[in-house]
Length: 90
Image 1 (cartoon, rainbow, N blue to C red):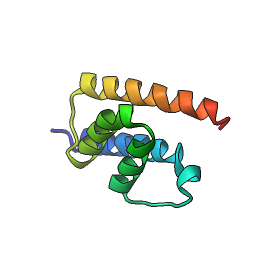
Image 2 (cartoon, rainbow, N blue to C red):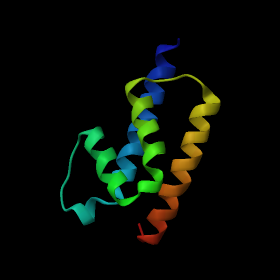
Image 3 (tube, helix red, strand yellow):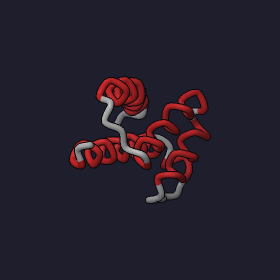
Image 4 (cartoon, rainbow, N blue to C red):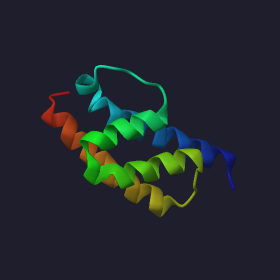
């Protein structure tokens, strides 16, 4: 496996997880750098997206190189996060 591809996968998943957390940080009134806590907090407010965010966390911890799987996950969570950001006027 290509080490750069694995690092890229981790970097992208980290951005997705933190971006999801940013949607709820104001409601929580607290910050965490822990990606697991970011995932848990996000899931509390968006339970319908919990499994996909869990998959993002799993991909961060166990990077994959399957481009199709990564693209589908990014499209799904990315589109949701963009939509929610627009609602919050970010």
